[in-house]
Length: 315
Image 1 (tube, rainbow, N blue to C red):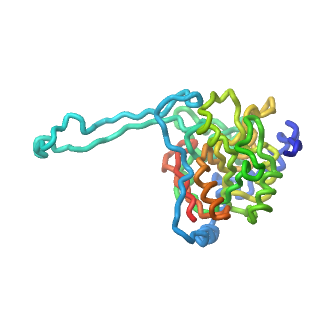
Image 2 (spheres, one colour):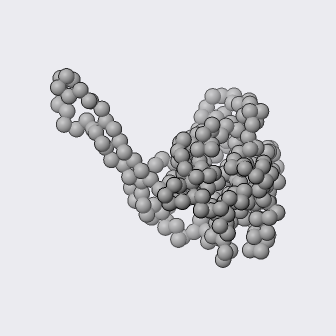
């Protein structure tokens, strides 16, 4: 692995050198989703040859765990309890079960998309809007997740870093480097292109499945900030990994989440956190094929900074 990890000063310079502010106009709120197009979607559909789909979402669990301090909640509003077999329908017309659920989806376990309202830097959102436009009373009045309501249907590319390095998983606190991504391109025979969703498998979910969950204080792997210039150069529409998308601890005193902070605020880069890339990696390896059509539908929520989702890779 390369030791070419940028200094904090270099990463701070990315806010200027990698900025997309004004690129699509002063009023733009879509950021890198501008790189999607009907032409790109049509190209992605040409990758569907078998009609086989693979979910890239983790199951939503309602139990606490070491890395889930506040688990999602679920309860039944109505249920089938108390119904005797053979009871006449006319005596109780509303024979139905209904649920309630709620969650804090930002974190380290629920598969979700971050909108551009999720992070600020020095009081600014993407494209220079003031951070106070995201408020506790009104929510995200700009750059909300509902901007993605048409869905994200494009070419997906998987970089399986443990496969490239010949390890089971990357260690916590260790980052994916640009060299890993370039090595995957060369070995697997693809090129990351404008408008792609780039999925990076680190193996951390596999490690969680094998060893069990650990507190977030134990650290995490993800793409190192050194990858940001490559993301900008290739023009990816979205970045997704099987982690929270930032190395932890970051190693930068003033930035706890440099990939989110530079990516979202400066680049307008949409981010998919906590994907399940285990079954996808197996499907890609079996086919020796690391590109596919990817369809991501977020909930059509208003004034929110993200949404749970179920990304589907289709071969």
